[in-house]
Amino acid sequence: MFFAVLVAAFYYFLFRGTDNWKVKLAQLSYVKPFMFKNQDGVPVTEKDLLGKVTVVEYFFTTCKGICPKMHVGMKNIYETYKDHPDFVIMAHTSDPETDSVARLKVYADSMKIDTKKWVLLTGRKDSLYKMARNSYLLDDPKNNFEKIEDQFIHTQFFALVDKNGKVRGQIYDGLKTEELEKLKKDIATLLKEKGSGNFVNGIFTNNPQ
Image (cartoon, rainbow, N blue to C red):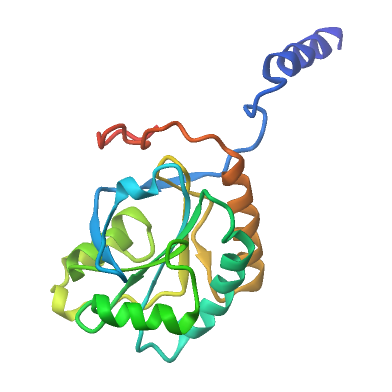
């Protein structure tokens, strides 16, 4: 019994003053290199995520079904964290053939959002879809093998990326109140973590830790 108390005391003093004792949010994946354009036609790359806690979604401007419902939940998250300097939302279009830079600009204006904090992205369809599947786990990677012209991602799920480019926590259902509340709490947790100044895969080696 005395030995157990001694061990417990040792670990308490070892980790006291650090975050090492806290339960960490699981790492699911990591962000691969990319380059898309935002609603202002400005290139955005994975380097723009460094030091930011990022919520990732996929949508399309002509969506009349789940997208407006998703954006009700996302708007609540946006309002909660929009003033935090280390927080950003990245919304990728699933329909880049329709969602040009100009169309995304009009859509952003209609939502009355700060596009420095809620960024709308478009680009090549195959690149957008590979990021959804291989980085953010928002769709089955097996679908990459279908003809790109036959593919369409229509998902209500959100991903959460930490300051070092790791996809963390879980994949969150944007239509479920309890999962949106969990997402808000997990964002707060990641905002408290210190960034390393580098992405998890170093300068894009393929060995996440």
